[in-house]
Image (cartoon, rainbow, N blue to C red; front, side, top):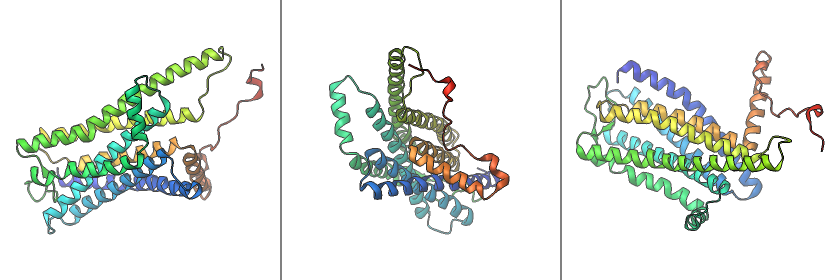
Length: 325
């Protein structure tokens, strides 16, 4: 990748990193506030908190590596140091993908009752040990990424285009490992999320039909907080699938064209963590209300920007349109 493009990606990633850190720090602080008030976390709060920590750590390490490679163009530090940083970044990426997938799995089990008894027992066993699963996921990510240091080899481009510590597949074992990592970190969690998405969509359609039939069409069915969770879960799946498409493009650049696309991969992952964090905030009504209120309070300091304010509460329908029973 040419030097000018690398600098542009570095700058864009820096701008995205600000939003990523803000949203995930907001989630973490709100979760801590909830823990202090209730003296415990619900399972979904445990998963969301772990996801926000993984997002933040990934963004910090990712941008630190990109900054250091821009400053240390001659790679004066040990290549192993940079390679370990990249390994940790990919390990955190694995953690993010599977934790997001686990979150959609959790919500699907709460919204959808599966008719298969053994599958239901399997779900219950997992949900009883949410904290354990959240801790096991990063350990699996680290163990999956450790072979990178032995199977992949340092990139051997010119010094102008070289990224310090960048490791690339150079032979058959490297190509096989790269493919296995892609399947484990992207494809499998994606399949699980799509399965959960389909289950939730079918559940929503059936539920809306039942509610409409029971109301005899007198008014539109309402799901309240359940609808917000459904929107959040489906939005997470859509954002993930968009990310997976562009990440597969970066994988194609590495394996087929033999180009070092690690910077593109880091940029795409940073954008994904930003949008997924915003979707998570929307899914928690208390988080969303605090964020909107803080946003509007911030705009109060600049009267000329008052037109950018967002309503914090929905307008109630006028009494003229209500149906009397």
